[in-house]
Every structure is written in C-alpha cells, then in structure tokens.
Image (cartoon, rainbow, N blue to C red; front, top):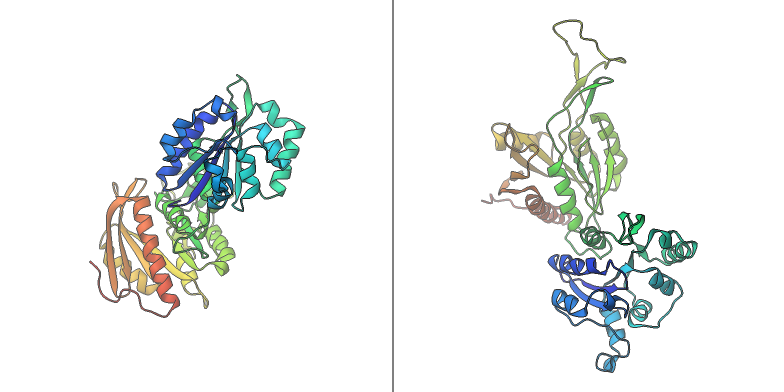
Length: 408
C-alpha cells in the first residue's frame, strides 16, 4: 500500500468508530488516506479525529466554497486509486445503487474511475431486507466490491449478519484491490508448503514436524511482490494469506498431482514443503490391531515433486529448500546440483531450530554464489528471499548469469 491513495468514505452508523482504527491501519501500511464524511457520520465521530489520524483535512460538504473553488470534488475523485465506504449504511447503499449525487460522498463515487468497495454495517434485519439485498446485488453487477458483513453481536443487542468487518480484516482485503507494482507483478508463482501424511491404516499415518509457517510466509511475500500465487499445502493449522489461492492436499502423491495441474501456468516454482521421502507400500484397509511387540512396515520411495518439476522440458524458475541437521551448506549445494535447481534456500533444523517456531536462519545458494540472509522472523526472511528470487528470475529471462561471485 506504500504511497497508494485511498479515499475513505464514512457514513452514519455506530460502526463509524471502527473507521478511525481503519485509518490508522491503512497509514501504518504506507497508504495516503483522505476521509470524506456524510452529515450523518458526524453524529457518531467528529472530523477532528479523522484529521488527526489521516494528517489531512476531512472533506464534508459538497458546497464548501474554499474546497470547491477549483472543482475540488472532481480533483479528489481523480486523486483516489481506490474508494472504500466503511461503514456503508443501508441508506448509502440504496443511494449508491440509485446513482444519487446529493452529497459529497455519493458525488465522489459517481465521479471516480477508481475501484469502489463498500463495507456494509447495519442491523441484521435491515441487511436481510429484500430492498437491501437487491441494492447489493445491483452494486456487485456494476463491479462494486462488497466486503462483508460479518456475523456477531450488534449494537442494537441482536446477534446476526450485519457487523462491519474489523479494521485489520478490511485493510488486508483492501490491499488485494489495489494495483500491484512489485517486482513479480504479472507473474504466477506456485509454492508448496507444510508436511505430507502417508497412510499406514485408516487411523494412522507417517509425517514430519513441518508447520508450514515458512512456506506460508513465502506465499505472503510473493503476493506482496505482485505475483499471482497458488499455494499447495499439506495439512497445517494456518490461515491462508490474503490474495493467495490455496489447494489442500494430504499425501506426497496428492501434492505431486496438484503441482502437475498448476505447473504449466507457473513462472516460478518454490518448493518449501517437507514432502515424505518414503510411504508404506501397502497401507492396511482396516485398523492394525496391537497383536505383537513389533510392527514392521514395508516402505517405498515417493515421487520427488521438486526433481519432477526441475526435469520438465519447459520448466519454470525452480527454487528448492533444504532443511538439514548437519553440513547444511554442503548438503544443500549437493541438492541444488543433483536436482538441477536454479536456487536453493538452506536452513538448519533440529529439536529447537526451524520447526514450528517464528524465526529461522536462511542461506541462499546459487551454482557459483551464496548469500547469508541471517536470522530473523520467517516473514522478514521470506521477503528477502522473494526479492532475490525476483532478481534472479528477471536475470534468467535476459540470459544473464546472476551473482557469479560469492556474496558475503
């Protein structure tokens, strides 16, 4: 959102108090926020509050002679890169659907070419009214983005659908509506993450300690860099990063099949998943009973997802991950060469390292180069890694060789 121009329209409703927090969260992300209020909104929150948080005078009146001396409402409509109405009352939704231009905010919505989003907030019965439903359906047909509402307790004491989405959620969703200007804009990135589970019988499986946190951080970082991201994930308890399309799988074979369905459209493939190397050759159809002191499993190799992608005749830019308990760089470089990868990120794992924690330490290797990204939060490291991937991918398109000398 850095430097993006967001016009925030505030209409009359008790949820207007949340809009003050929304301004703060948008500013934290680097956006420039201009607030425009309806007369009814001023009955709930004063303009001075929004002016202090946004750093800009609040626009209120279409008939402000000073602001309109140079057709200020048209200038503001052109300034906006995205318009968000939060809260959007039932009355405002009706006036927007009817093409009204009887106050500053409705006029701005008619005069702008920027995307428009609304965050409805009203009593559950008002939200369920046929007139409101028809207005919302019409707005959707015209390309207006409807964000929410959520369900829960309402100021009137009732419980149901009609609450405005929380400011953090709105800020996340709004980011997906803005044009992406990052280094991976226009590119599709396919990422695998998490562990796989290999069935022993209907109630037991073999797996590993991967939490998927690093892979999900890479997916978020790639999306932030402007890419269209598809995330193929093993079984993990993590929320999907906003704007990322997620495909859930369980076994190594299911992950391979999901990747093969997506890979032809991918420009970059990043394999962070901890895919099982072996699986039971003949899983039992029924639960294995505890009848002896020992249980012997006949194990067979799984198909190597990363190597399969790297061996494709027309392949994407391929990035692997190497989680090692010893000789980290040596083992990672061997994997880089043996599987014919373009890049690999290596980290040490163990009882207290790498798995199911918030921090990591990454070393990135190319065929003739390395860069130590150091230790830090996984998302911060993911952003640095994605930056390097974008640089190397761009260089590969021009036939240039990236980083042929060792980088400290």
